[in-house]
Image (cartoon, rainbow, N blue to C red; front, side):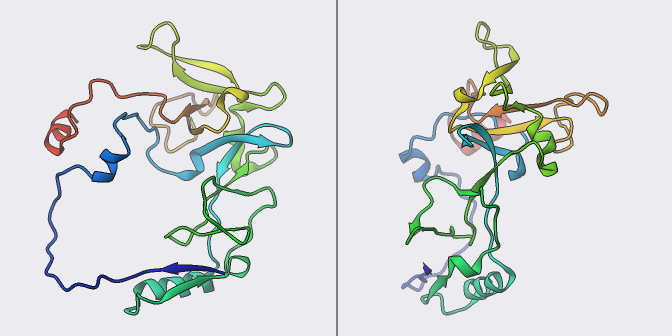
Amino acid sequence: MVKFVLLSCIFLFVFRVVSLRGNDPTFIEKGYIEMSFKPNFVCFLNFFFLYYFLGQPYLWARLDRKPNKLAEKRFKNFLHSKQNSKEFFWNVEEDFKPVPECWIPAKEIEQLNGNPMPDENGHIPGWVPVEKNNKQYCWHSSVVNYEFEIALVLRHHPDDPGLLEISAVPLSDLLEQTLELIGTNINGNPYGLGSKKHPLHLLIPHGAFQIRNLPTLKHSDLLSWF
């Protein structure tokens, strides 16, 4: 059994909604100062992880394990109840929808008695391998060749950082990295890659494209920069 504890504030105070323009202290403390471009902006279906499967490097797709309808209703009622000081208990074996046998929980997920614990949203983040015979990931599997253990990756040209190149990169070089999929059939193809007759899809490692000449991290400066 997993318990979720939500405590209300012990003080009474008057509050008002304001637009905060200072930097988040957590952001500063953890040193999040190297900005990079994130393609596609949304959609976890295009979010990947490189790890081993069947003894070789494999592309894994994001798949969160979610609670079933009864457990989700119970959890929402708890969140909206006024008795927020009470504990919420999860039964991981009974409260969650089944996942494929090859599903694995994401790294650093807290565990209790060998079971991965849900996060504050009631989900258990995880991964499933992208296999060729899975129609759901047909475009995703088009960027990898498991026989030769390579993937099509968009990255900076090694001799000229101002240029980009499409490379066949060994999967072993991408192990334990997260990546994003872009291409003809992904999120409306904002980058105009390929065509219906000749679709083109590529992987981009997160953090590959650093944002240069970034202004100071102030609200007003960032607004004018964009």
